[in-house]
Length: 83
Image (cartoon, rainbow, N blue to C red; front, side, top):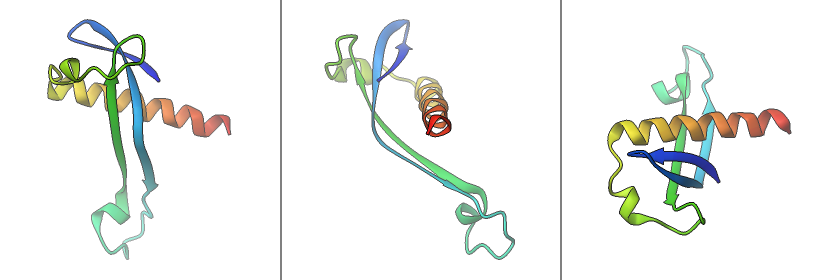
């Protein structure tokens, strides 16, 4: 669970799916995604007790989603570094 805020309301983010594929950087890569790599992030917004909060998730703007995805990405990167 990752602590966050949506419209100033404290919440928790439960990561339901995360995958990061590093790009090859090779000019022979079959697609731009293979060249640059990509990251897939799915999450659920929860209240501070860890219960699903769909009412709060509906309030999210694109900026909120982008900020939360960045938080998840940074959190997952730290997790990988600790292993």
